[in-house]
Length: 418
Ligand SMILES: *[C@@H]1O[C@H](CO)[C@@H](O)[C@H](O)[C@H]1NC(C)=O
Ligand SMILES: *[C@@H]1O[C@H](CO)[C@@H](O)[C@H](O)[C@H]1NC(C)=O
Ligand SMILES: *[C@@H]1O[C@H](CO)[C@@H](O)[C@H](O)[C@H]1NC(C)=O
Ligand SMILES: *[C@@H]1O[C@H](CO)[C@@H](O)[C@H](O)[C@H]1NC(C)=O
Ligand SMILES: *[C@@H]1O[C@H](CO)[C@@H](O)[C@H](O)[C@H]1NC(C)=O
Image (cartoon, rainbow, N blue to C red; front, side, top):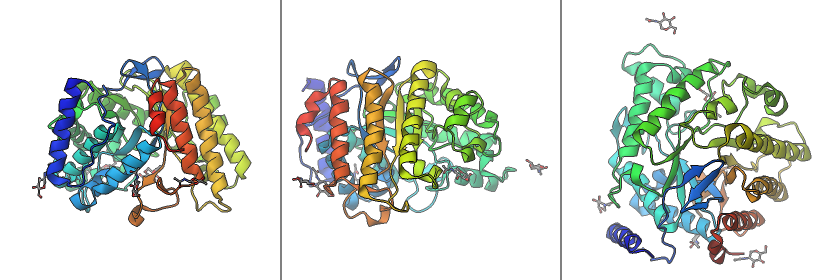
């Protein structure tokens, strides 16, 4: 361990010990630098960074209450014991119970300390965080809440899609971004924008704009917000949070790969990522939701093509890394079996790995989503408890090891449970 790392580590241990009696000192102390990008690859500590990871949107929410913070620690410990090194989580909770942002520009300090804690634990355990600034949908507030705030300030807004155009709403959003990147972590005293445990930001979770299927409205918004984020935080990578639906800039892909219903959502995978301030591409994959009437084999076939198409475009057109930010197999799909879930994970991982193995842009897949044991309030058709020794967890573990070796992080394999 480098001296400076050791000091940083001690500071974390001391800060945590104040409120966190159970603290176990682990051997895996992360002294990583920032994740950066070179051509189609992520770079970490001078080497290509290929990884495996997970979503845990609830981190700040559960860490708001110090008595439930152990859930974050358990989830991260379980994840690293299966070799995972990237977690995606929400950097928002606009209004409502345990809100982060209680009103435009007003923040709940305890909830922010929850997010602080999640970052500290990620740093301590060697996990890189991708943090999203707002939600498309109304879960945890989202665009709907921003528009409601503007309305109650007297703005002439009604639709959620006014989010992208109303000047006051846009200012609210920028203020939130600015508050996030300038937040001083109460445990480490490190400003978020200087924190290497944060891998990058996403503009929004699954942005869509039905009000303008041409895609212009969302494109204008990204053209304004992406450079804004980079202007207040030039240390971190940025992506869109897009699901990956194609638009008019790629008519062929639009026809061959989009679910028809996605053609009215106003997104454009190529155009939306094809600007300098966007460092990596984002896609999600949910064939079960997009094609409820296809049979399982056809859905797997589609899944492979969906991923391969985007990976090809990331390589040839965007020339950027690509992260599969969400995927999973809903257990409420008619006829669901765990073997089907394993097939979805295997197909996904194999497609990602095939690109990564050649030094390509597919840098990782983050399944939706991890919960800790006993978190019944967050249990749903997609949640996975890593401490359940299922075949799917084993498949996740193997992918982590394979990806880590590619990036020269092979030493991680020693910590992986087989
Ligand atoms: C530690 O807990 C005390 C209350 O027990 C609280 O006042 C303080 O803000 C907490 N410190 C941190 C860093 O969370
Ligand atoms: C995005 O938000 C709109 C409401 O404004 C909603 O109709 C749509 O389903 C949301 N999309 C996703 C993927 O959540
Ligand atoms: C509010 O906006 C709608 C359409 O965006 C417009 O038709 C209406 O005239 C506006 N109302 C006021 C009071 O400006
Ligand atoms: C994994 O999480 C469980 C609770 O779900 C916990 O009991 C266990 O200690 C964790 N395992 C590791 C390796 O941290
Ligand atoms: C996990 O389950 C497999 C069989 O599916 C078994 O061989 C292995 O020992 C189990 N590991 C743990 C840690 O329980």
